[in-house]
Image: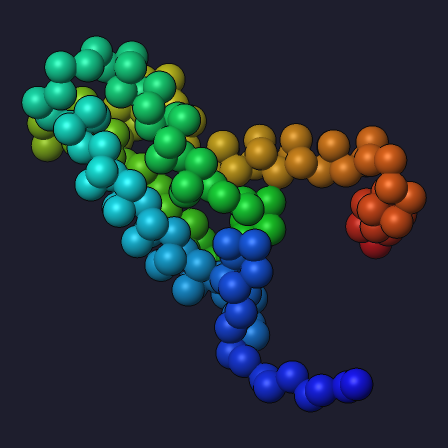
Length: 152
């Protein structure tokens, strides 16, 4: 029994919002909202007045918050630089909150001191790791797609 599917401008699939132009603007907004909701939940642990050490705050950031920002990154990394920049701004804001850094401390200094890479670099590493794992995949269909992508 065949049924016509209605045309949609965007669809959410496995937590990734795909739009008709593959701009991922809605996905970036969705990720931002999800990120801030989680921040509000754990702000007593990572906020300015938290009793935790900075190392523990960084650990919480890496384990809880950064995966929200970079979920499905190998797919949306092709998005426009403005959308990727918005995600970097979210990371900058939360790192400033965690460190209670004054206004004159640059984001680069905060990243270097905490040994946290920029979102752009982190996404590149995630994507490299993802595509390297695909090359070693057992499924021949997936492996052939990776080979096709490398030859074209």
